[in-house]
Amino acid sequence: MIDFKKFLDLHYLFAPYADPLSTPFKIGLLTVFILSLVFGLVAGLRRTQAMNIHKRGWRKWQVWGWSTGLVGLLLVAFRETRAAYLGSRLWLILWLLLILVWGIFIIKYWFWTIPRKKKEMHQEAEFKKWLPKNS
Image 1 (cartoon, rainbow, N blue to C red):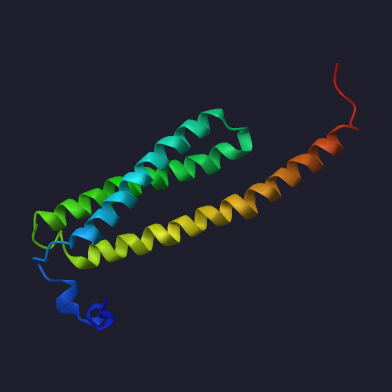
Image 2 (image 1 turned 135 degrees about the vertical axis):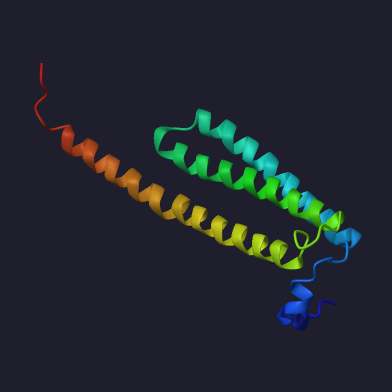
């Protein structure tokens, strides 16, 4: 069971030499970070095949995937090698919170901004359909 009172203790969060991660937690983190690298690669491939309006959304997912995976693996490596202050618990917690918030902003862009832009482009195309064309 996780004792959440520890997360309020600054000595626990900023311990210069944090204990290595437990095996199940380490496997879970490595899986998440490696899958995010794969997701970044897939998003990059999808970006090259996407329509103009979706390219920016796929680019956001690509950057999210690559940076989540690489920085996450670096933080796990610092923790495993017991690097002073770089393997601190606080950095890993902050990184996990940051990627969660970042992902929420990308989802918001994908489900709110892109449909609005599609609608605007469609309305503009309907309007321009009736305008005289230059020969």
